[in-house]
Length: 211
Image 1: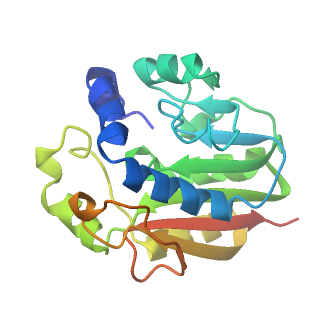
Image 2 (image 1 turned 90 degrees about the horizontal axis):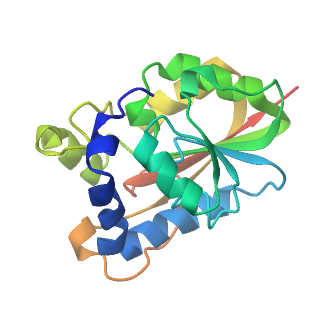
């Protein structure tokens, strides 16, 4: 998770996106809430400015971009400057872990997922929210990625790609939720949440760490 330059240089632009797209943000947040059925101690990896951690009551996060860390810390999140590929925690420390649109900025998704597996307790959850590469918005982002200050260096994944990596890391028993069914500019109310992943552009996957 070393692709931090855009988040250092354009922190205010990152924050503006949430203000300009409130219903997209709320739709994504609701989909994640629906999948985070477990309670206990949580960790958000790539916590950014804390936009998801705060309403989800996640008080611990890691974030390599200093400007993002500062904003999240002001929101009351305990943020450690570190990378997903080298989590600074003991084994089996968290009841659940969360990544939201973080996977496309990971340096090594295989190593990062193995680290999440290591720090998650037996029976714990790993929840990932991301833009599906094969969805309408995913295809749009791929086509125009060089025009975006954030997505120039991003790697986009399909649901099958992510499930493959989760299984490889040891997670099982997957559940799927989806939202964002229209172009972002057309979203003027909170989008519905559906099971599965074949229609919505934003997909949430939950995997379980079994003994």
